[in-house]
Image (cartoon, rainbow, N blue to C red; front, side):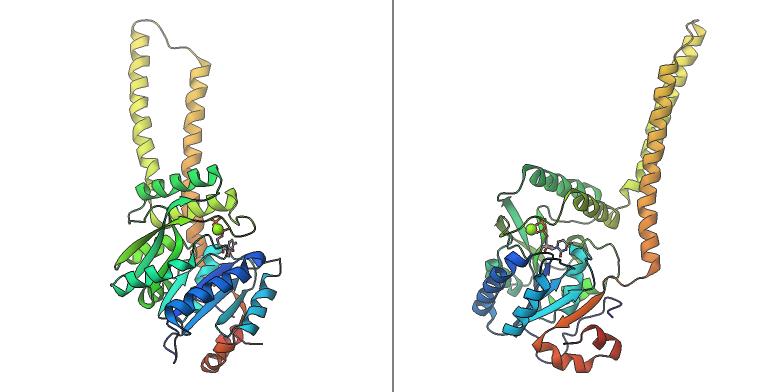
Length: 342
Ligand code: UDP
Ligand code: MG
């Protein structure tokens, strides 16, 4: 079984010029169209030397069956089946370790990000960029709430984190082999990939585009997952929330001194401050601040705990790919087990 993120096998003979990596969670309805469009674009831009890595992230709708079928029909397709649903970022991480291409394009299965931008992205990479990311100018047919919350998230993140993460940018991007290897060498469990890519540095550039509506199906990011994603992003790249305690302490301290002066003065002039209500308000506010700060500490501590376990980041159940049989011969038993072609 796959146990760690290991450098990919791109050093093997005949590494394709391009790998297209697509995490798929219940994307049965979009996959055939995705396959057709990616094949069209790749044949046009890079010729036959490309691979399409489709990662099935524990789908329940026949996605894996369709991926296997595509593998049978098209030798460019590499099917990767994860042992269960791991979430978008981990599914993507799994795909990036399997991809062998000199360049790697990350795409969503729902075709919201047009693969047709590949040519423009390749040109920017030819000019020296290691990462070319898609930057959304607008989002078609997404809910008002999704657009506003995403916009707020990107801008808040920008304020909080210490590195430059471009706004309105998802995981849709073309990366050089060097950038992918650097990303794969980062062992963290909570993976906020677009932040990790920014962290790498090197020359990065943007291609602006209009984000399309989903080709089929519904978003796999309900509010709870979006919130989790946002917390992962902030805690993974910033310790500013940990400083909230100090800032709040200072503010409340100043307020306390003010109150002390006020009560002392009232006592002198004979107007003792009364009030159970005001006392309770202060107690409740203080209590809630303390709980908030404990919660923030807990978030960081929980992440430390998860990292300390050193568990595998994802488990691969099976890899199906006609093009990978030679590679399987090169691997150790344990790795080959994880990558066995049936
Ligand atoms: N996805 C995944 N695992 C998950 C959730 C999503 O692999 O647990 C994939 C999904 O199939 C899609 C991509 O991640 O290819 C982005 O998901 P989605 O389109 O639902 O997100 P949105 O575009 O709405 O933010
Ligand atoms: Mg989408």
